[in-house]
Image (cartoon, rainbow, N blue to C red):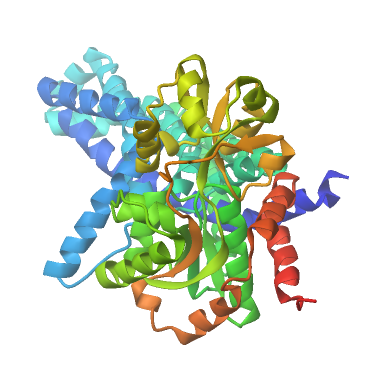
Amino acid sequence: MMFSDPAFADAWSRLPDYLGQHVLVSLTALALGLAISLPLSLYGVRRPRLRAAMLAVASIVQTIPGLALLALFYPLLLGIAALTAEYLGFEFSALGFLPSVLALALYSMLPVIRNTITGIDGVDPALRRAAQGVGMTPRQSLFMVELPLATPVIMAGIRTAAVWVIGTATLATPIGQTSLGNYIFSGLQTQNWVFVLFGCAAAALLALAVDLLLSLMERGAARRRRAPVVAGLAGLALIVALALVPSLTARKTDYVIGAKTFSEQYILASLIAQRMEANGLAARRREGLGSSIIFDALAAGEIDAYVDYTGTIWANIMKRTDIRPRKETLAEVAAWLKRERGITLAGALGFENAYALAMKRDEAERLGIRTIADLATHAPQLTIAGDYEFFSRPEWAAIRDAYGLAFKAERAMQAEFMYPAAGNEVDVISAYTSDGRIAQYDLVVLEDPKGVIPPYDAVVLVSPQRSGDTALLGALRPLNNAIDVTLMRAANLRANDGKSPEQVARWMMERIARPAR
């Protein structure tokens, strides 16, 4: 029954790509971490100050949240890539694989360093004296006596590092690295709990399998038996082969479509990919990227196209605080993008998705709140919730300062949980005007009498490298002004009801292609 479920079938079809990429980034990061931490540990084991410094640095790295560490590497590498392109004549990709590998490698180092030092320190001093007694140098004693005896303890550290890396690799999705985390992030955004469970189960099973095989090798090393070590290595090689072969032999794609971290973006990325494939262009998606990361990735040519919103670009990228009419904003954004970043605004889709403050209708009527100005009087007794970006965005600062809003508490939460929380856990939410859940949960959007919130036309952006790509631009052209807010709200509701982004995109394609009557 479960295997015939469309959501499960969809999850299963993505497994070769997601698992292959997850294994590749985990394996590379673990190998890099071992290549750094093992020699450092052996060099520092007889040097107390260096040893203390290594453990301190590795411990500090371990305290940094995994997602933050992964995200920090992206702007750092983006800057280095720009410098190498300008001064050395070559560039590299700062999105996805490289920042993920570097961050995960750092994460893997603490258990390896700690267990290597602990294992060597735990060797019986009498054995060291015996090694010296037969004429061994300290270096020979370390490599021929102490290191073999410490191997089981070191292997335990490698086991811990491997499990940590495999688990943390699921957080690499927001910086553009495909992994099993794609199931979890996209599942949370679209309320596809089959995807969430599938991703968690796949990551857990992979970690358990690797840990079991490394444990087999650890026992073989402890008992000085070669067969378990060989069997463990063969098992690991088999997992790597089974995971990577389907990914390496998959059809190569020419275009990369980006998507941000909410369901509308997943739908629109699928819609663009389907439009391109209908025109014979192979496309893949990089989903779950943050607003600043996805824009920088487009400007750097890491992705070829994605949907953004004029208000986001106006306030966050252009740093504009003035408010202009909708058409004027669109024209100025298009001109600025081309002039300053070489990015082409291929067209507006036809609807706005603006930020708005919303409340439960009955609560708003009870308090007599129709506008944000009315809200200001009651704000000190109310709690507001926003998505993860909202309270750090200039739009919120502009609304708060213009109306003098001072809420009792501000809570950040996943957008999918924010709507049902309105009127229960929180009083006000930062809604999206193209979201069908406004009507579904009987919310009322508060008017903005001061006109603080800028226009948010949904627009398709194309990277500088693709600005002259007539095939791509031709494939995107039929989407111009083809989606009104009613269609987008209906599409978002279908995604919230459990339809996959691909299914919703196909449904939209049929309505866009259907001639008007």
